[in-house]
Image (cartoon, rainbow, N blue to C red; front, top):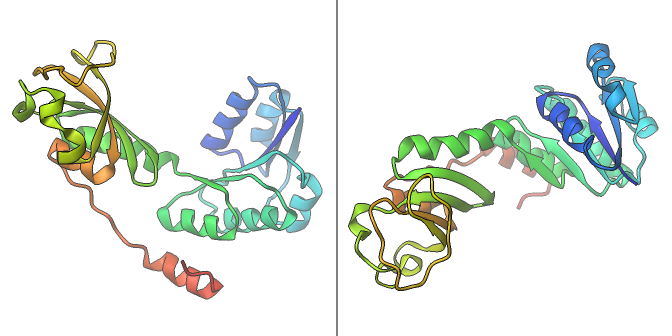
Length: 237
């Protein structure tokens, strides 16, 4: 049976408890808040009231051969970095950590996180493009820089076939499927299909290409804090 540890029960940690509880697995939770532990203890195999800031406690409570550790310590960013590092030193192979900011996330990766989750940023990132363009109905980042989106056909392409539009060459987008309107079902298509005003395209492409196709443009920002931290650790990339 697979075994998972959840260290810190913020909103993300609590949702992970609820989701994992539906699987055939063993869940171990750690949080310093007694009320939180009491509320969830019946859903898990083991529940500990403890402050994760102590490396000794982490080593005592978390088996080094655990399948995955999930960290959600809310706004305690320094503690989440320490806990991630403790787990990495213990040899835990899969460490999933919730990050509050881009800088926090990059530092978590530096000290050992194998997966970094940005619940607030990811929600905002999915919603913002839809607010910025009337053509985007849904937007889902699927990796660094790669996005899947539902985009209404721009007026300038209406009447053209997919071959004539050639979205891969002109916009760097791959069309996966098409639906006839916002409430319809997606269907596969032939290259000779002629685009209509109410058509919605399910496309995959780079973030900038999605923005450009819908008339918007993404803004990228650097992170000087993370660069400084990397230099201090001697692990600049």
